[in-house]
Picture 1 (cartoon, each protein chain N blue to C red):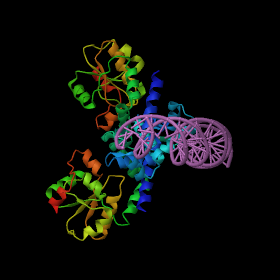
Picture 2 (picture 1 turned 180 degrees about the vertical axis):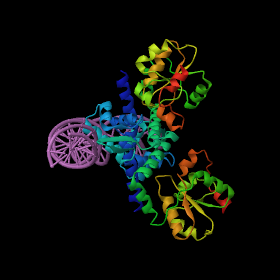
Picture 3 (picture 1 turned 60 degrees about the horizontal axis):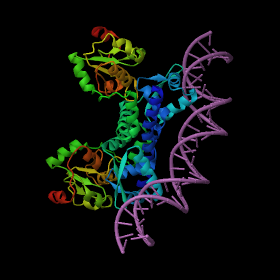
Length: 227
Length: 227
DNA sequence: ATATCATTCAAGAGATTTATTGAATGATAC
DNA sequence: GTATCATTCAATAAATCTCTTGAATGATAT
């Protein structure tokens, strides 16, 4: 009785892990960490067939990692709450600490140049307040427009080089993007370091910043203020 | 290049989730959360064949959730660090919040009687210091001997009824066991409530208490002091 | 009502994971 | 060295998961 209940309980716990145990579903969660999206947008971003994408989303919903609502014809999916985000971040942290291959990949992306430790969001907030640092948002412009760290400049990856020419090499640069899964900030920081800047990444991404309860700007007023 | 690296990275993250995505491996982790153990002890506890148990443990080791060392002929496995514990706790929390079936099972175990909210470990520590509460450790005596909350009484599940006769019904009782997976404390508290005691469970179990950095007694001196 | 669009459902072939078996390794004792 | 014990490795059949296909649903527009 107690034993069978216990086993049933553990089955349910394992089912949550199983939902995460597919690269496709991980990518879907990564996308949803940027904000809610419809099935068609997710299918396109992840290059999954429509039906397959829908099935993966249902699996995630079945274990409560995401929820969905109808909006006209469209089904809009979103992460259930910050716990889903915390779960992803914890898995990613364990991977960096314990799987050599993960650290190798992250080193490889840094292009052989020394990769400084990411800056904590707390330090970022302090230096932003002090105004002695430039913060770059490396995500696509649409995502920047939908929400960004107040005071950050929009710097899509393919425009970082150009933007660098207008920056002062003596001012430190902190780059962030979507979060632990997203490598935009890593690549941007590596490129900037190669050009002689003191560039670092920020721990986590905008979703983590949000999860901290920190302010988010939703248009480009803040950018004007900084420029 | 960046894309393929990103996919490789996500594959690794998913591999950690895949390692957790089996009830057998979950049970192994639950056992290891009580302390390090050899392969034979784990095989016996989980009723897995020896070779199968070894293979599951290797899978967990491959992704860094557990580590092992040799001690003579024996291979001793242990959780790599507290992050593994945090991962299990987070999954379990998400399951309770989002999967109805999980809450149903926990309610069922309570035997139809109202199930009060678990007491936080912080509150437990305060009331222990104040001395106005009885704390019961519902795990097997060997596990109690290997480490317990200072001041707790050893009360294996099948002895709780007997012990209850010597307790004062006006003093609240807090019961704990191995942690979120373990139902001993839930059952003990339910039985005590049926006998008219004000009995509650403690959030998490001994591993969580340890992870908090709180003191752990390793023999029964503390029990003598309380009795 | 019918048409259309976005999404979900259902069934089956293909790929992956799992448990079992028996052999191989590694460490200790003699 | 050989014997013994605990563990790991390797190969296979069975179970499970995954993707594709095509049909079914649900919501809106006409």
